[in-house]
Image: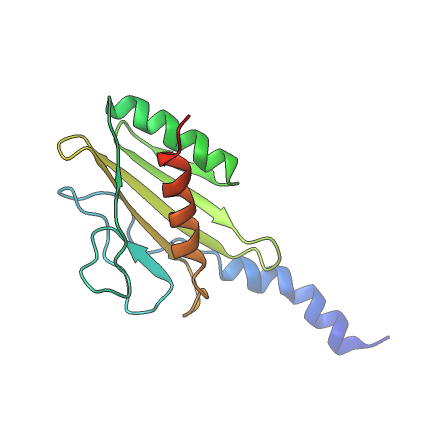
Length: 146
């Protein structure tokens, strides 16, 4: 038996579980989501630097309708809703192979009729553009005719 491989295989679930811990702060404070870290594995509609900045999602109609549409799109794309209020959703998206978790937050700003969002990897430095592509796909799905 190859003991180093057996030991590595036995430790893998423990290591992956340690890598999926919660980020330090989630939620909305004074209409703002948490800022992105300096690493490139985060995008936010409220970021000011081009590396992290991404456009918000405009909506028409009632905020309640926007939230319902958003929840449906999250479910279609494999996200699990971890927390929600009348104007906020925190969803978790887990990668298939390594089971890394990305935290995606949405804030429905009724005053500006936009959905602000932030998508960030919990661990690592680079996500190879996964968060940006996911959020662009969610925007396209939201804006597509229903």
